[in-house]
Every structure is written in structure tokens, then in C-alpha cells.
Length: 633
Image 1 (cartoon, helix red, strand yellow):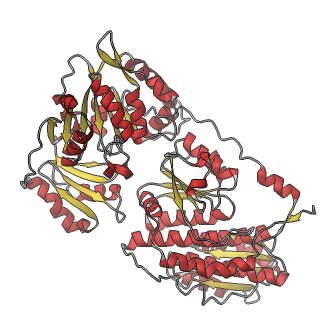
Image 2 (tube, helix red, strand yellow; image 1 turned 135 degrees about the vertical axis):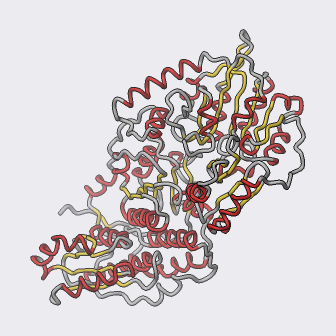
Image 3 (cartoon, rainbow, N blue to C red; image 1 turned 180 degrees about the horizontal axis):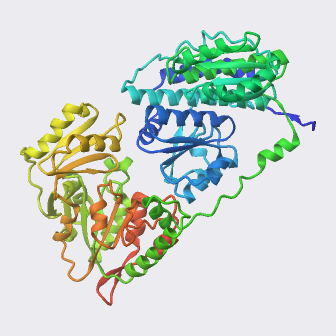
């Protein structure tokens, strides 16, 4: 055995002593806003959770929560697996307590390059101290503070993040927010640690909900060298692994992780096993999902008891020189990404990026579209607002300053501008606040998704209380479903808007309304990134184009939800020259997203507007697609 040196760090016993305080911190604190926002996103999209080492257990727990409580397809991967895999949809969540290893930066770079967005980083590190490779508007950071430092094994950091995940998901699932002491209040102080296992190897039996605990226990014992471990769920154990247990019964301890979901199966399994086989039962004392931090606490103490029996310190083990070298190896280079515009269209078509001959069709279509739009005389640009002119999470701040600057420039040079939005009076007021008055006659508005069209110079009439009978049925259907309790409903003569919160996703709201209003052919249901709008059928954002006289010139349309379920689908597929700053349709002759990896929303719109320049010879505007794709801002 190659001799090394003792890892410096905290003794494992001192880490165990801090665990009750870690649980108490989560119990008494409100869920951080960034974590609540992450949970809302995870309730709306499939997700991939990425981590290495000890953090992989919390990634697995997050994945389980998404599947169990949010009903979303979700998976957990190591950083290497993520960089090698072809994940084609949903959001990515990276877990790293200290962000001290290059594996997590490599995974972040891979997510950005292959457009596995939105991208979140969950960390205990101060956001302001993160490296440049893990900062910027393309990545959202969830900072969880308060855990004491870890030793060689991630201990308090794992328990802290697991407890926060349980609390955040539980509150959004039950719609309750309980201040003060919670389900974890007494778990740390009333714990009676299990005895050390007698066997030289461990067989850990678990259910689906407790797989993260099994993974954490396996990691601790393998990394400390205290025991060899295999993990298996109760039923897969019954499909043959009992043979291996029987052959090594005198050297094996069975550790059974038991919560409410597997209690009967676990007890019957243990009853059938010969009494001569050593077994330890770790029983959850709290309901799901609190049972996971509870069982983590118990298994961490089981490792502590075993370490004391062997007089070793898992928090400060002896690390060999070759172990150091292994740790510093870089992740294998991920496969090169295709052009971002091609990747997005392939996903809209439901095809993997490398699939032929569809890939060839998409690349040829992109080439033709680029060549065509560069020759087109543009007379007006028509824009969606939320998610395009402003970020969805910052929509209350109005138009992004970068977009303001470019629009004022273009208006001053003679370009006509139309804005089509589900908003009403707020958009009219916002634009008047920063567009110079002498330019108002060049701006047309399609408010309420095109239900009301007027010029920026026109006064907005006082709101009318007359809501059409067809739109009134939206409120009635929502009340009958109980949906009114989960969303904010705003009724207008032109549309009914339903703004979602943490209790329900946009997709869930849309699907419920589609079912409830299936017998109302006079209504259309539109989804944005934060709300669902119901409008009379025939209402369309394209109506704003009728208010813009472009003569023989063309329109350039820009939005963020060009997918078939999005509220910009009709707008971005009504004209050939259209761009999305986020989701695209499957059409190959329009609705492209040319942005480089990681740039979206108003940042991308700024680049699109900057690529529009006045052609003095033809007295029109030209668009240069190459300038967008070359700019990696």
C-alpha cells in the first residue's frame, strides 16, 4: 500500500456534534427566495441533477423529490456522466458545496455549450467569490448558508442541503409555510445511534424514496475504507442478490432503511431472512420528505460509531499520492456541440442532434434562412414583451435598459416598432416613460395579446367593466376546479390572465383550463413563462402589424415562446423572418434562435436589435445574422 499523508480538516466527531444545529437552522429559517424559485422551475420542467462525491446523494434526493412531489421526469448524474450524455430537454441543477473542484466547472461549461438550460448552481459558497466560469446571467445561483466546515467527508453540507430541499418541496407541495420549529426540531437531540455493524461488508436495503440515504452511506464507508458496501432496493434484492448474501452471510451486515413507503415490505423481508444474519434497522421518525434528512442523520452516526470502534477518523483520513493525482485529473472532453441554432431546431423536432438525415435538412434550412434574411429590406420590428424585452423574473422592472437603448436608436433612425403583449395599461405607461415623445408615432401596441391595438401616442381609455360572457366562463371554470385558489386572476374586456405562483406551474394551469374549456370553441388559451391568458378566438398578436405601414418592406418578429404551446407561436410563425430569444417552433423556414450558448431574453434581443442597421442607399434596414452568432456576450 502506498503511504500518503493525513488529510487536514475537522474531526468527524466534531462534525457529528454540529448536526443538530444544522437541522435547527433549517427548521427556524424561511426558505431562501432563490431556492423557492428553483423549486417552481423544477415543478415545470424535466430536470437533470449533477454532482460528484458526497454531493451526489443530495442530487439524487433532488431528483427523487422532482419525480415524487412534482411529477416530473428527473435524473441524477455524476459530472462525467453529464458531460458524456446527450440530455436534450429540461433544466440542469449543479450541486457543489465549495465549488472547489474543476469537475463542476466542466459540467457547467458542458451545460452552456450544449444548451442544457436553464442552469442552476446550488452551493454553500458566497456568490461573490465564485469563479468567472460559474457566474453570469446564464447561470442562476442558489446560495445556502449556515453549515459549519466539513472534513474529508461532506457531512453538515449534505444534511443542510437535503433538509433545505425537503422543506422547500414540502412547502410548495402542501401550500403551507410554517414559521418556527418544524418536523426536524427534535431529531438531532433525541437520536439514539445504532450499534456498529458486525460484518466486514454491508448490504444496504432501501426504497425509492431513500435511495439517496443508501448512496450517502455507501460513499462514507467506501471513502473512509471502513466497510465495503453494496446498495439495492428491497425488491431487486429478491431477484437474486440473496444468493450472494447467503454465501457470505457470516461476514455481512444487512442495513435496512425503513420509512412509511416500504415499512410492510421491509419488515416482511427482514422476517424471512435467517436470524443468524446480522441486521441493523434505521427507521425514519419523520414523514416523507423529512424522513430523508432524518435517515441521513442516523446513517452518519452509524459511520461515526464504526469509526470509533476502529479508532479511525473519517474526517481526516490518510490520502495516498496517487489518490491526489487521480483527484486532479480533468473530466474527459465532452463531445463537441453542434451549432446552437441547429440543436434548438432538432429539439423542437423531437430528434437527437446527431440524427441523420434530419440533421442535414435542418443545417441546409438554416443556411438558406441566413442567406435570405441578410437580403431582406426590414421596415418594422414586432416584439413580444415579457421574456423578450425584459427577463421573466425581472418583469416588474419594465423594459431592460439595454433594449431601451437600442430601440431608441432604431426609432430615431426611422424604424417602425410594434410591441405585442399580454399586458395592458402597464406596458402603455412603461413605454411612454422612456421613449421620447417625438418618436411615439412610430410605435404601435397590441395589448392583451392583440385584443386592443393602438398607437403609443393614443390615450388609453379608462378600463371597462364589461367582460364578455365567454370570458366570464373562465372564472366560473376556475372556481369549479379550485384553480382560483392557486393563481391570481385578472379579468379584462379583452382577456382573462392567470398569473401562477409557487403552487402550480404554467403547464399545469394551461392543461387544467384546456380540459375545463374544451366545449368553448370561441376561446383560445395562450401560455407565457409566468401566466396563462385566455382570449376570444381570433385575437392574435399579429394584429399590431396592421397598424404599421411598411409598404413593400418586411417585418422582423421577435419573441421568446415560439413553441407550439407558447403565446408567441402564431406571431413567430406568421412571418418568415422571425427569431426567438428562447424556445423555437419546428418550422425550418422561420422562428430560429441564433443566440450563442447561455444568452437569452433581453440580452439576446439587444444583440438582435444591434444587428439591424440602416442602409442609406435603399432607405431601409438590413439584418446581419452573422453578427449575432459571432457575439458571445
